Length: 429
Image (cartoon, rainbow, N blue to C red):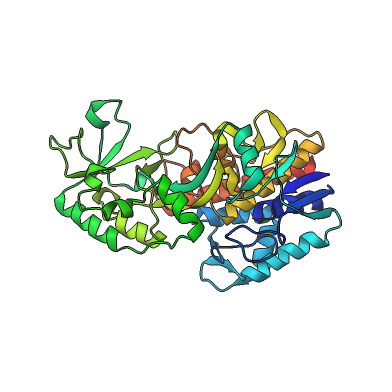
């Protein structure tokens, strides 16, 4: 029997895959006896923030491509979503209650799934831990102690943009005071550009935090919009300070610095721009910085309570613990961001745990799939590790092709070919 701790999207996905492939599963979840502050229902796989699973465009959106990969691997999440979807244009939106009910019924009705209602207080020796971004109590303490504090208390991330979408004519590469080898890409602003940016930043709409999140997040990391509210020049003495930098022989009025988010440099993070603005507002306001006028945002900034591992230190690419290949993690606790991404990690953890239980060698999906790229992202060495969602920045795109639509379509076609190859591998055993 394989134990799965946590009945969210990742845990439900893992448990269902194992059971439908002939493995007895003990699914441990604390509901309905106890809930996290974010939950309200008693069912499994509860969507607490939105009924949207984002774009369903297979060849134009990385999350849409990921959903199609999951469908081809037999994902319970995608089966439930397709059965309970509601009209939402190009997005896949669901009736949240029906969605949770569908998954709950599938799991409770399966003869190989034993459901245990209790709160896990410590890590098991083996199995799958999928306790989500609000992991707390004894289990939280056990994880923190066993992994040497390699655990983050909240998710405060800055936006990430595609490197090929920034205006190179409005940037320069230089490290402050000439130290280093020009590790940062600098985006200068003059006085008028800076003051416009600050005005729009202060008037932009923000996401309303829940009460239990407020003190934890703001004590640890101040959002850029809150910093700006402390005075019109606060940002110029903080993350936008121009000291030690020169552009065309002159020190700019203010400078945003961009830092590589991957080894290839195809994705760039906005340094110090942790933010709680709504996603459309991030696009609108940050695009006022001249170099980012046409920037494509691969990931928006988020600030919310989110316990996640420093996965590059803790996990391998199959979501197993370094030094203990019988124990797997899944869901947002691994550093994947988003509902679909969480389901993906649960499905892959289930696949890998099943192969482990049956003495089979691990098989990873190709890095040309979104599944495979995200699997490798959470395990790749990264001093600035932050949660990541599905985006084209983690995929290898053909740099010889200039047309972005064609480039994405080719990447999608290649990904689906590779996911079929992966499915054949795991089914042939």
